Amino acid sequence: MINKLQKRILWVIQISLTLIILGVVAIYVNLSYKNTISSSTMFMDRIEVRDEGRPENRPEDMPDAKPEENPKELDDPSMDINTVDGVYKISYSESNIKRQSSNVTNEIIDIANKVSNKKSEEGFIGKYIYKVRKVGNNEKEITIMENESIINSFKKTIILTIVVGVLGIIAVYIIARKISNSIVKPVEETFEKQKQFISDASHELKTPLAVIEANADVLSDKVGESKWISYIQNEVQSMNKLVNDLLTLAKMEQSGKVQYQKFDLSKEVEMTAAVFESMIYEKKINLESNIKENVDFNGDKEDIKQVVSILLDNAIKHTSENNKIIINLNKDKSDVVIEVKNQGNPIPDDEKEKIFERFYRVDKARSRSEKRYGLGLAIAKGIVEKYNGNISVDCKNGYTSFIVRLSSK
Image (cartoon, rainbow, N blue to C red; front, side, top):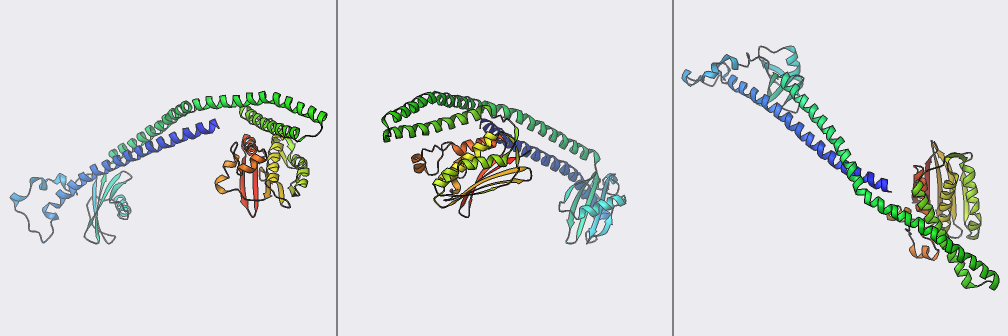
């Protein structure tokens, strides 16, 4: 339980901070991308504006400006798009090339064809940065600039950012592990003290209970049957069961180790079911067994017998007269599946997980009268999880089914 709590805290911290780091990385990469594209397109805009200002690029219906009104930079050939090295311009009209600068190559035309169909109006492809501008309804003007150095610089920035992000995530994991350890440590110490107290108290209770039981038996032999002595004996038996269950839980939590040994699971399930035949007969319950033969399992046979006993005992106590209990054992690929189902009232959906908690009882009044303490299913779940298995409950067609799935590997 402590390990599960620690892992849960660890992953909550890890996932939260990882998402923050990834968000920061994504924002930084996005801003770097926009800054890279923006600085390049601003340069292309300057070229386009100055190119359009040259007399030969004026529309026919616009009169030539007077010489003195034309800025000198418009006559600067270095700013002509046809002469700027590494800058290319292509105009499309309805997917056909209408105009292009003199330095356009086939490679540039291929790139222009690709970017003309893109949704984004600016970006980079390969070593080229592009900008698409709509002119009128059916015309597009594409400016492409070769700028390998700035694109490589942007890629290096991305790689560096990702490396820093990964290192940050690793650092977060180390920090989160330490934080989870520090948070869980006091809980673990308290839990260990609680387990030790339960174990010690259970051991201390066994001696006086044994003395009371022995004395009650002696009194019964001397004075004969008495309802008072019978009450004492019944309560002692009930307390003995509770103490044994508490000791079982304490031992299970302290060791958690399995003594693996291959055995015939089919035979053990049959023998365990046979022990309960007298109880089933007394309650006039019908028992149906569907046990697959020669199913082997690698584990501690006493653990599995205890799980089956708990589930059968639970089924008997929740099955009315003339109703049915079914026990199934099957193999599903590499798993063995044990199912104990009984006819009876279904378990409410909001209590299906709670019934595996210690001291939890669905029908508290009935459980109290029957001297049941809500530890059986908790023990069964603990044993199953020791084998990395799964136990679940399902209610349908008038049956309540407890399903245990264990790996047979």
